[in-house]
Length: 338
Image (cartoon, rainbow, N blue to C red; front, side, top):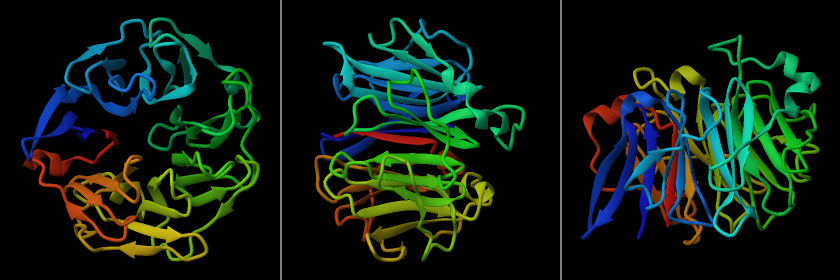
């Protein structure tokens, strides 16, 4: 059974296929500012949703019922969340949550108690971090756990740095000169040690040495403001990204223009059109891989949800209920139970 979970301006949306028909359920009010979703690989029916206006929420039944995590130690907006399955107790993976202003918290017991990890705020580059719409602040945009090197965590600060910790967040190494400045999504692959894929506001970047050095790879991209990147765990060499000219065309449905590009290692980026909506009027897609089906990806934007079963070469729209109000919203985050 597949369940897909989307956060947009209308709320937290759960799509489920029942008796060969898809249904949609709005699970949290739309005024909470839903920002991020993470599923716990250790306790697979558990997931977390971070909101900007009302803290952290969780579900223990694959998205049917949600409750607020009242032990979360701050009222700051939750901007990113992830779970580390290799750093766990018997019941849960280690939960990491990032906020605006930038701060990182960790829980080893499913959100009952928390530890603040704030050493990264003393890094030299921190003095220059600034989120352009709110230049007096910045936030943790993305948290990525390296699947091949225990203890290694990547933190993307919007905007200004991609930083690393090799000891579960206790100490940090600052950004490197060749690295991305404004990472929106970072992916690490369990079958390609050291390889990282960054979709950033300043282009597309790859590293093959755990982020020590980076290459910017934009050949073939007509737009270099990148929102999402997806790579299937069993195929490190086929990469999908969503791209726009800038934030005004990526997120604002009134001005939207966005495309999906595909690249195989050693080749240039090529735009994918088959089965996807016209670029004009389409907000930047959030793209995810289905780890249980080789070559299967899902993409979600303001026009609907799309599936590809041929490594992103072609797509078709899922027959999900899609309210007119959804068309006015960009997809902030996308996750799935597979």
